[in-house]
Length: 137
Image (tube, rainbow, N blue to C red; front, side, top):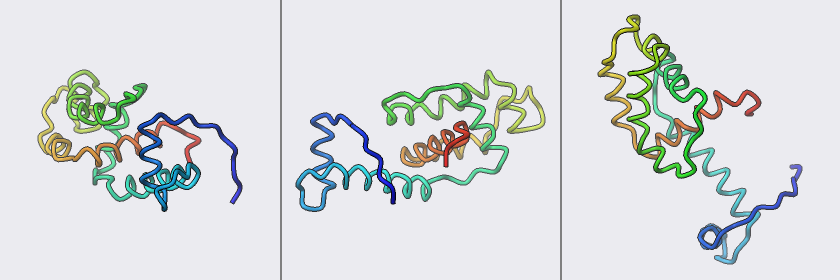
């Protein structure tokens, strides 16, 4: 596999995490970084919740043009409110969730959103990123 030479700056917290991930607890940046990337991809694929196509389209629309907060846990905790806000203010989201653009209550969909765990929401964010990033492979 081809290798790419990159420079990454790690903070002290990251150094400690890299040491924990490294097989001998000695810092091995290449192994740990590649391992984390692979683990993240596998976890997000397995944790992605089930939504029908219209629900996914509504979620994508809700995050159209939004940048995720650098604190992804904080962003995940706000996910429910972001979806509720999109339903309240974005007619396209409402249309995607139902035929009536004036409808503002979608109890089954909201119940699904409320039931998601933080890791599942992060998996949703990954899927949103893939949707809005055309060159993502």
